[in-house]
Image (cartoon, rainbow, N blue to C red; front, side, top):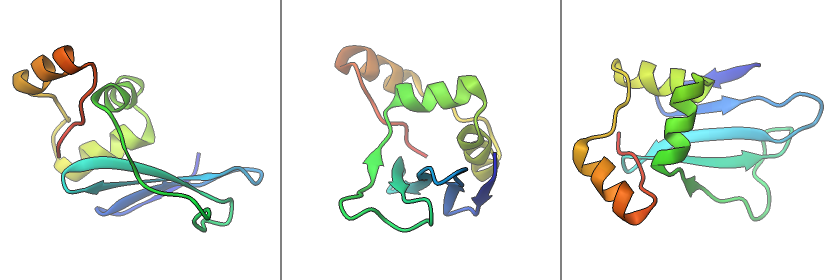
Length: 97
């Protein structure tokens, strides 16, 4: 898998004309959007905030997103007790960075 990263964003490049995945941390939330195979924004493409469960899945699978987040912070990303309690009550939560 090929990707480009900077402290501001991670771009996971596509193979065989598949969409490109772009991630960023914006206002302390991890966000995602899909780009076309050339790296251009789709007409109706917009940023979506990832939930704590989606972020935890990346961490558990040690995806390029998890590696990028850990490299950005210098420490493994963890959820606070308050965030875990809130997530249990609400069923979803965003992780703050």
